[in-house]
Length: 131
Image (cartoon, rainbow, N blue to C red; front, side):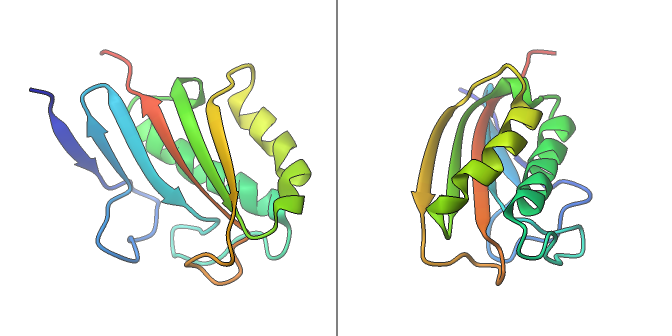
């Protein structure tokens, strides 16, 4: 039977509901939706969706690093955006963080997100390397 482990990550704000930052189930890591907030839960990036995307991927990077993974281990992302027309502005940020790796991806336009002012939220699934 595979082990299940919940992860709370230092440097990320306290979850706003009954969830944790990530759950590892065997070799898979399921990262909860990350929004563009800092450790205190304050919105980062204002109306600049690229700046918000950098913060979102920084938060995801924290989770990956804390579990021994990296962006090259991400196999799937789901991106939720309040304006799908912002996609071309976040693509360069995605290329910066993923480099040559290309995870499977889904993009969904939503009417709003849980954090006021957030223009995107991203969740991910990654492989945790054997150590």
